[in-house]
Length: 297
Image 1 (cartoon, rainbow, N blue to C red):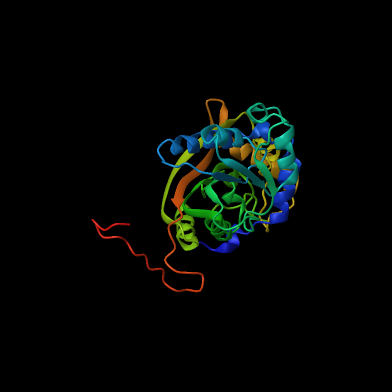
Image 2: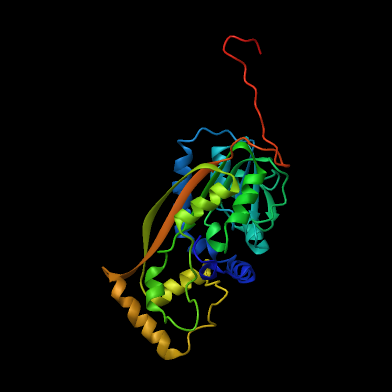
């Protein structure tokens, strides 16, 4: 896999950023909502009737209503690292509130790390994760946990961000003093991690989406409001001074198109299944006996 040093993120900073952004996240989550819509469309072509689903990195819960509408008879679990995000899920007016009045139980909230899920093995049929993996230095522990809690033939449906995300911002900021836009893991490395975690035949694709902004300051405000601040371990604590801010503001103008600054997001979407195990927990091979055609069961 690509050098880990370039992907080292500070989990405490990640949690702190999303805690602060809990109240403002929904007004700056256009990208996440668009990707959720595309993920949901993919489920149209997948035969699955889950008894329980888990949203890993649910944030303020915007995807929960979508999952409930698709699978109304399934139990839902909503997990996030940030407690304020989970609390915002219950207070904001939304379709979720109309689907689950106060007298009716909705998805069960869980405040936990994706790399240490507080769930029994094999208890979930569908694991949904929208733009969570890109906040991890190493996705393998979280993918291994998702594999563990999924039942055999359970589905992992996910999205994340690739290396060309925010490339215009990265190119416009000073290239000294530390990582100013944290790095994102390549799709091929993610595929290797899925296989290593035990998933079978992962299917992934990538597309570039572009969001436009009126100004450099609007872009930075959007990232801050959505909790998407730089969380690299080696991040500098701000630019050196006013001159560098002005230079960055002037540099990003080269990406202005039709009056707005165009910013790229490399979106990776995929899914993978949990196959039947080939070995037991102690390493012994699993041998399955099948009836021959014509034999009675």
